[in-house]
Picture 1 (cartoon, rainbow, N blue to C red):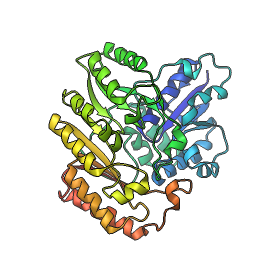
Picture 2: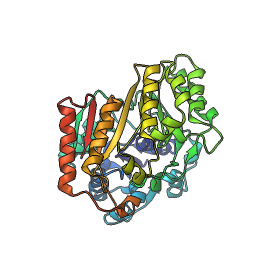
Picture 3: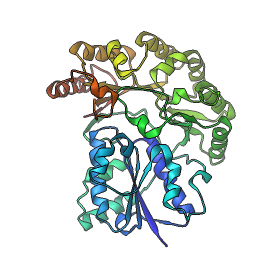
Picture 4: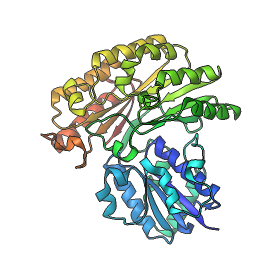
Length: 405
């Protein structure tokens, strides 16, 4: 019996892809092993979010290539930064936007990838992480301790300072992946190259997944998507309509985490969201603003009115004072001035988020923002990252925070 091993780097969606690939291989009679050195196939789900994650993926590729099993590289990095992958790997690839393409690797399989329902939790190992660490130490493979510990939480991104009471995905909850792909065109983002166009799941399919979870006693729900607010625009539905259907399905259900609700959708759907949040059954939302500078938002192609966005956030908080809001900002975007930087800090202060992720701008040549000049000097970016972290650590910005350098 042939065996396989799965490794992943990255977000909740790739974490769920890893589990889905695992279930596909199990359904076709392969055995899962915790030891990559014993596996006939090694599946690496990659991430191209930033240099830290890309470098981790490259390190994994180099190490797994030395093993006897066939390495198959999956995930976002082959689409987001193909040259970096090709520099170290020439084997078979499965792209995030075409996971069904895995069937082409195994034409003999009787169960096809599309035959299986989506998974409702991310990839898990449990105690296997400790066993893997021990075996890696014994074998002298040289993978760093941080590469193993990174799998204890999907939120690990390398050189990170964290002070957090997190508004975050919980893998013990029922995860409903409501759509694939994205409608956005943010200039700094290469992710759309990896995930493709928006593809929403039908409401009845999602409600069936919900019923299945409820029958297992899972009433706490994560809403998972790369572009949550765009849900349904390709199938004649809307995100607020779906959220209402989820809450109406069973009064015991609570939505614990809504992922990646673009600020623009918060403004567009604010009346509906206020009503839904007011039920007290929507408990936290990740809604990225990226900058407090209107000038930079235009360059980022994040067409958001900061004034209207702030009003919408205030309205939701008034409807449910217990609602937790998490946001993300980028430091060092091309042309960012000291004034732009201070406007971002000012918006964070005014909005009063419960948690903030601060990302250092990362650029590859295929990003649209790569042509925007001038770039912010390295020493200036480092200084701004240091200063914003100091504001959090000293309590001038009063919230939990994560700094991704």
